Length: 169
Picture 1 (cartoon, one colour):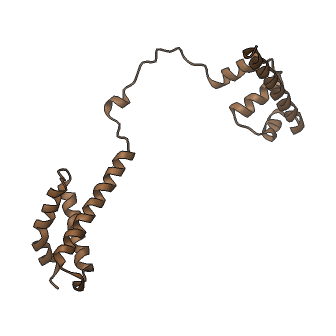
Picture 2: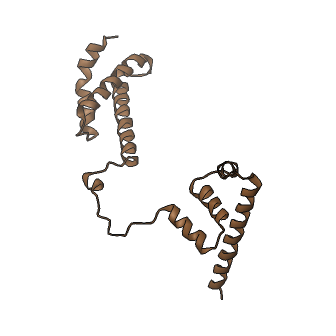
């Protein structure tokens, strides 16, 4: 079999022909390299008992380029490239929104939670702390924190159900 340099010289026009047939008009150099790599692989894998090398090389090169085109199309569909307009800063016409802690405090006042029940809501909901951690911070027993929790949940559920019943009357 011929050396790869000879095969490359002979089949370079075929690679360019495939690039034109696949309507590749950007990144031609990259696709030419993909074609050369495919030609090298075809040259290495070719079995003369199964047919002509030119047919095998053409199919192998075209298949490699089509796989790359498909891969790039999928990447393009799943990737968002933000343009300059995307990053423009919009003036906020709304008033400053209250922070989460203020919202939770207002809810606690609205549902008339005790000071300890409010502490539990803030520690648990706002800061994400467990009952044992709350107990150690407040220097109380875990059962006391559980009682705060139970009372807060009971009041919130009662008032929520009362609010819902107003809708159906």
